[in-house]
Length: 195
Image (cartoon, rainbow, N blue to C red):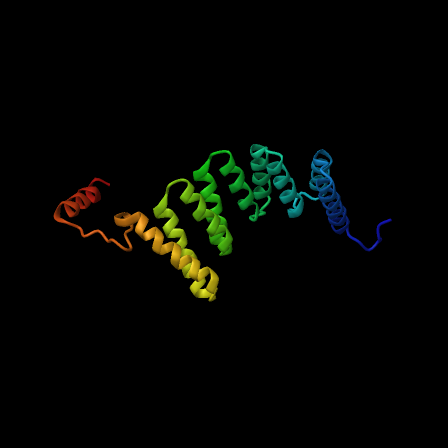
């Protein structure tokens, strides 16, 4: 029996939380179908329950259905749950939509200052053969490590930046700035007048 002093919203929240707890227990028991139903029931009671959205999306990924996971995370984002960007990014990556995945993860990393998200993003850039983007991301991590005095991250970031500078060689404008010759200057002037 519910306490008469609980508002309808609080009662719905506690019911949804209980369903999320049950869903997690069913997941642990490898009863995925029941877990999906419990997460869904929790969302029917409380559509803004972040744990239910996150649990359902992660379960869909574990079940090998990144397309459904992407739909779940997108629905959560429509409800303002920005943390779902990470889940949607991973679902999109699994679907082979790397540019969208990288955009989602970068948006999340920038909004949260999340070093783990930046590290994952740098790995994705590396897998896609985008060493300059990977280098730029590791430079962000290096700056963050300097700000926070995270010596472990600082050492790793320094080593990685040095290695990536060697890898990208002349395509890194920070270490190999372009000296504008007369031809480049003329082309830039033409481009300005065309637009």
